[in-house]
Image (cartoon, rainbow, N blue to C red; front, side):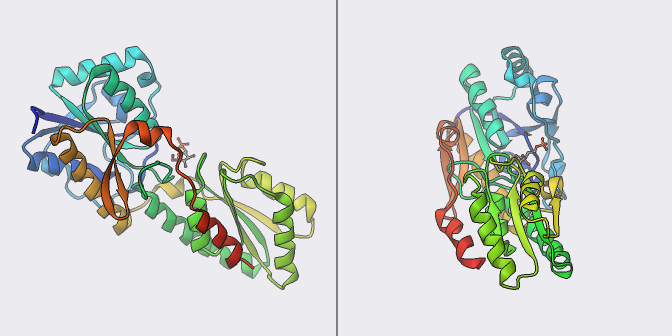
Length: 327
Ligand code: F6P
């Protein structure tokens, strides 16, 4: 073990179910290993404003099941500036914080990478985002819960779609990534899934919808990731389809932030607990500028550079699956 004494922990970017479970694991693993631990409120924004508090193991009691983040989160503009980061560093120094665990997504790790380079401070990242779009890990914390939230919602919408013989376009989150749309689409039996990674082929979609309706399918669900590139989301896709098929009874539902909330699934809680503890172990092991990952059910360490430089790809086998299953 190096001479690290005090670790700061924060959550940043879009909140994700399981962030609290990760925070709990970080705090308790730090204390277990005789490190002091400070909770930094509102991510990098709070670091700049010195919103920090000494934590004990009791500070994180009864939070493993809670969605959101008790630390609060923010997307900090100030931390993008040199002056903001300088202020943040001075606040850490003043409190004797000599290393950090940051829980968040790619924006969080981009900030962490720059900060670590500028001030030579050991930082370990824990991936928390419902988008599951980080290279180097099979799962990010929050993804599994969000998947289940989407599936539950789509199941309910299907009841209405079927009762009224309607065509529903359901928009799910994912500005740049279709992982949530693809997997929840398969799990909910969507007839078509539109994702940012694949340009929507409207001709193919029309043929597909026609085939379905000609075959006595009296309802259909099309899942659209919010980052769908050709039209720009479910509303626009629905408008286009409606123009082509004025007789179809179409509706649009945008699931929105319901996908980010709620009690984390057991899978997310366990993943968060494993990753949080591993983050502290990595720091004690003198690791820096890495993200904790989970690959083939095993914990891995991924350099920030790799996690940020590479783009995680959709599993082509899952993409193919949707074609087979929706005939
Ligand atoms: O990154 C998580 C995410 O929920 C994306 O899926 C979505 O595009 C974005 O955050 C929405 O961010 P905000 O809540 O800041 O509008």
